[in-house]
Image 1 (tube, one colour):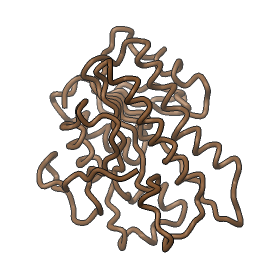
Image 2 (cartoon, helix red, strand yellow):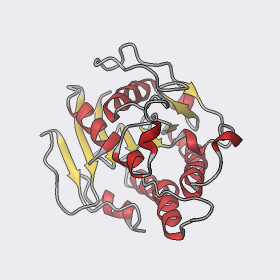
Image 3 (tube, helix red, strand yellow):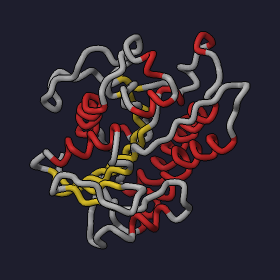
Image 4 (cartoon, helix red, strand yellow):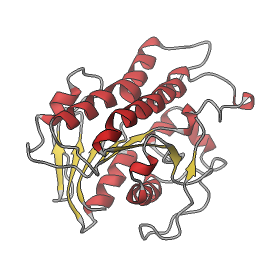
Length: 256
């Protein structure tokens, strides 16, 4: 991977791991990372921070673009920011659902549209939207039960958003990919009680997920635009090698 990389949601979890991974890659010129706060976290000297990028705000696209150098060309944009609010049938939560839909399926449209209109994305650029296999209707089975309406459905909505963006951007030569990076051992999955499934579900660390995702992005191009992939394959078992691209799982194209 070479050029300039933008990571939306770069302060923790997968986004932070991708930030560090790309910043350590000599072929990457600069890594731009977004944060919701007005302060810039300490980081690698190759990382430039874009502050106050809040995916719940209608001006999020303008806020992002206003802080980027006007001549900047981005080779890859990765949107990893997310929110998971736990729900059950007995306790659905309106505000949580609005936050999940807005974060997953509304904000990415305005981010990507503004980046394209400002000239930061052009032929050969890649847009990677962090989805989840939980958004696949085909992969949802009766034995897993219902609940968590906002989480699952917002990811399904994101998949459609990514497909539509791919159709709009394909004539420009900009590829859009939807990815399930893997079931991860993060504060987000722990916060909703999913840490009890980590071992049985083959959950991996964000660092492991970042390596396999970066390897997938390296090979991703316009020929796969609009498709829905799991870079770590059908299940996260085993550990990725520490060298990027070495002995990584085989990517699997997911059903919608």
